[in-house]
Length: 544
Image (cartoon, rainbow, N blue to C red; front, side):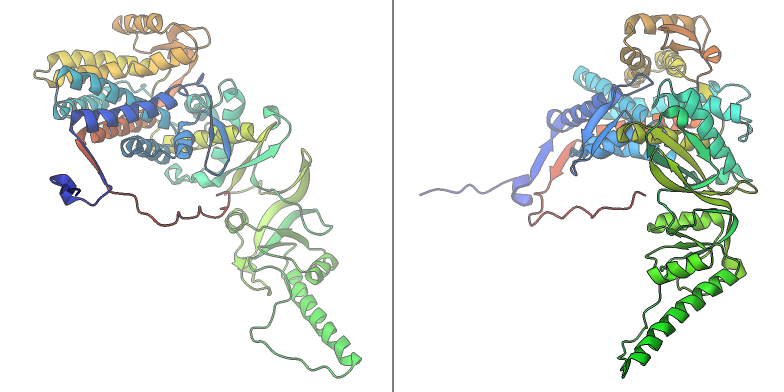
């Protein structure tokens, strides 16, 4: 006879199949270890010499990139504590659009140092208290490091924009920033509204076309549609545009009806009336002054025939997002039914033309004069993964422009800011009494991760670089950073490497918050995963 033991304690309280981890060894240190593993992955991609990662996601799509936000997005992290770091990276990406790697790697470094303190005998709550004091002090020190005169800036001055954008773009495409930054700056300045704080990132589009190289990239004032015009008319100048969201075709009746035809003559007349009806509609469109017809769905053969007869150019835009953007660019109103448009519903473009770029026919809608609503960066490259990486660099540049429209203050780049923060926080920790001072000292030490990683990724001697940086900063040169090309320490103002204050501020804040959140957890209780069939992944979505 088998005696079945009754569950007791927490087992009796929770459903069968649950997992329960508690205590320092099981919960806290395991969480820290998972976060460390994640930050080890992203850390080697930090900075201009960062290595690429090849990630293949669950849909078999391959990503080759050093962009931390893309890497952690596609990794599908399962561990609950590591997910907190992923969320910190995502928050940074949404807030600023750059610096996600710094946020994740710095949080991982803070947790690694916290583990050493826990093994020394400190309680997690003392570490959290020290880290909180340290991040508040860091924010104060960061304000002192802001470059004098950088708080005022003309966001329409290309040189000023490029100098602030350079570091963000170089971290994704090192060596190409000299070509990419002026293009991105041009595109952003073209669509910058009267009040720069209202700058919308979506107004700078990217069109990726295979073939050519980086030197073939251009900026178009307007939109680039990746399809050909339907029909024989391929170019229109100074044209009024009408947009039909529901397609250009003879519309079916709303109710079903049966038509009884007695002889051939009636059949002919029936076909003619349909023809006449379509011609009447197209003629009405032509009479309204529109020269270009844009359809959101199929274009019927008969309708196309009459469009040709009335010399109308016909475009088809199947994506509703793209159609919305097209209306935004030209100022047109999308009409649901094929009917005569009012004067207010027509859009306008200086030129609509079909051009061939690298064997692909694209339609370019230009608006040269007046307030530009959309501009497009046309990227050229030899493979899809190179184009995707270039697009990420452009996205980072555009997001940096948005951030500088909000707050244009800059701090020295190339790890100069981090070493100065580390030095000053170390001094601050000596003035503290109590066990907090150990946590503050470790927080200061964590800043060394940035220069150390930059030097490691560039193949330099890390100890030598860090000690010479400390020596220069102790002598009062607070703007000395690493020149990765020559492998020496130099003044960043001569190299012209500046980071945005906002990027640093949010990355460090999110990292400290994420680290404290992970340290606060002392028990993990996981319910048994729900059974039943797995949900199918969502169907193929539009690019946007």
